[in-house]
Image 1 (spheres, rainbow, N blue to C red):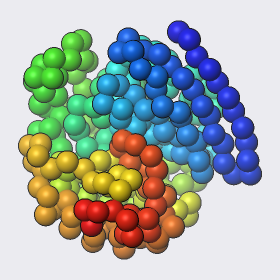
Image 2 (image 1 turned 90 degrees about the vertical axis):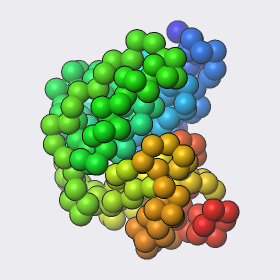
Image 3 (image 1 turned 120 degrees about the vertical axis):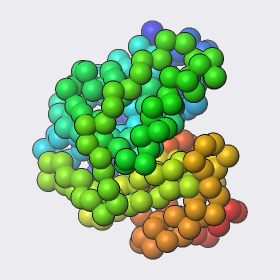
Length: 245
């Protein structure tokens, strides 16, 4: 598998650039690591799989979209190279592009899946949805071992994330806020100058807009947003420039 790797360290920021040619014939966008957050663009939907970690090396894997063997190898290589210990597997929501790698991650690191209970019907429809999209050989996700609720605190290592309930793109999407480091794992709720689609089952435009305005736009403007697709952004930038808001 052809690859190019470049690593540069600047104070508290690390940037890794990797080019991976997969069977679909495209180059995966760069992997960016910032403030102990790593994102990987995986699968034909260019979904962002996110790893968060701290100085203990404990980490959480959010939305493992790794579908191809080389994508799984890239994720595992990053974890092993950085001596990380995956301690939790969490889906922000359960659309197919965010759960392709659930079973592989669960089996590889012996982790129970964690989701909001309201996403269970979406998760259970995974196999049928894959068939409608013509996606072959998708491994069914394990059922959740734990349900996450709004207001919960997700702990790992020396760190914690506050759970925000942000439905609208899907029935029970969750976002995860780290106040200390000033970042948000947003799933497909808020993108760079865009928002999540609302035409899929369980989606609702008005609900999504309310989630963003009431849950996300109340965070500090400098909060870095890690979305489920595309580039990072900030709360302030979206408040000023997002045409949907």
